Length: 385
Image (cartoon, rainbow, N blue to C red; front, side):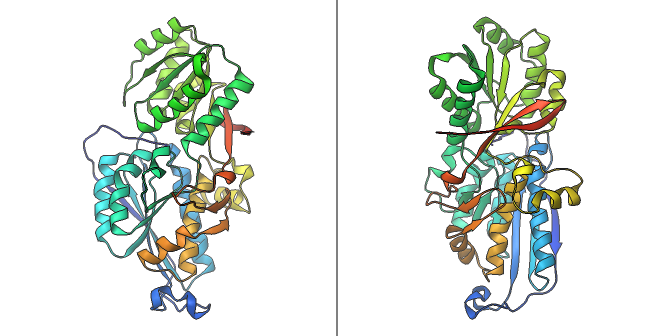
């Protein structure tokens, strides 16, 4: 997912989740000593849209990472690990000074994030220059792993895969005769809609773009009506999608609505109201019931709700790094090497990164979710032949 708010730079929210006791000697073989100094543990930064209109999309991932750190500390009381939170609201202009700050802070050995693709793209060169490895739970723009950046890794599939899955779903299940495509003008939105247009071909009869923080969608609604579309494909975020869909339904548009992972947010059906009923949202993220181990039960016990979008992926991203600490990695270089060679089953999928930083494509799964009774519920896994 990708987000780039056009707003003045705000204060960077900073919170900390600090766990466990003092540093330790690793109990394993001498090869597990952290950087040769015998210390276990270190500091990890996590950044993303922890507040703002699209925070509902990121909160489960943040909570998943917190849960992973808490469980690690309970099982490894002699290994001091620290997770520091940096709220960027998903805005690249707020994420950039955070990245510069973290690059200079030598106590930070790894980063979880970005959660959106815009902030990831803006900060990747800074983290790469500082030798800081990034593990993203949810930044899906295909271009992020196409530039040769050595810092960025992600535990989710990219938008090339998600776009192809959405096309398959629409062709095989919805069978629209005319599709109207809409995106929010960001590389995330325009990139995934490009995949839809390529896959559906002439079935896409018209398209339009919306703007960040737009509230009136009369012009777009008029174009949808004129097109005669029986399906709408929307790539963007809740802040614009919810009022657009609500206004479209009020204007009498009954076309089926298909969105992508940027709308896997409880605020989407809440904001669109009855107009969201039946809407489809695709996501390269697992339903809570599909996650491995006791993750879902542990998450619900801790936070009082089932994991939402990217909760399992946030947990996995954190554990990639925590496994490194357990193996005695305490320097930036050691952690970068550790992530590059990571090869282990997670709760969301088997995690192994290719040379670009993408997770093994054969392990990526895409699900279709449906809005029912104001809730986003799993419908089915989308199989790609």
